[in-house]
Length: 205
Image 1 (cartoon, rainbow, N blue to C red):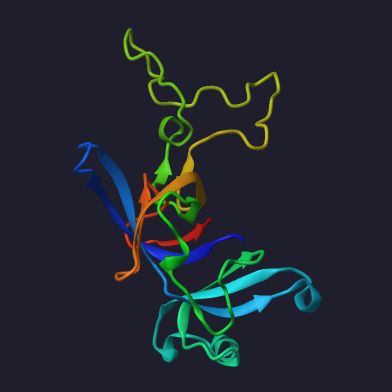
Image 2 (cartoon, one colour; image 1 turned 90 degrees about the vertical axis):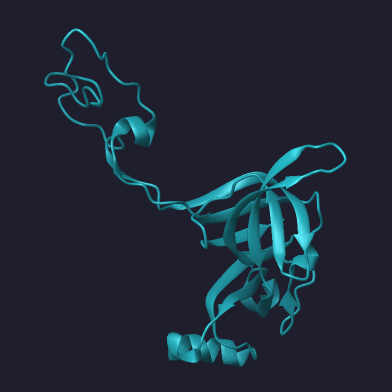
């Protein structure tokens, strides 16, 4: 069965292997415990899914509709509510999903909102090559022709141009769980994951 948990990216560090001396870059994720709000089934809801909550907050920070939904399943106020499609291993309504569901070596994918870069030009945003920097050239970081006067005499839709970069949902595939700290609810994932420090992430196994 699939695995899933919600968490917060605390940042990156490195882990030393005393036996081999190897250094492994890891991202530390504070994951769970996530109360299981609702377990949806094909018979009742038309599809299989598990709804998890994360980040407990005072009740005044949620709307009455959100509080009513959580109270219906005996779950206290939480800021995040995410559905994982399909059944999740060990997910029972009323109980909590913890990092114990994961083991070192598990393959996971992590989704989050990538770091926003603001308004950027085509070189940084789309990895365009720069123009010649000598002999009086004025085309160093410009995008070049986007729709010449005669042919096609218009700008095609979807043309790669300058604009806002980042700040979108990103899913990093092919990551590996390096270690699990059950006492402190920490997942150590080998490599980098999307989002800023303290950003919200979804971990799927």
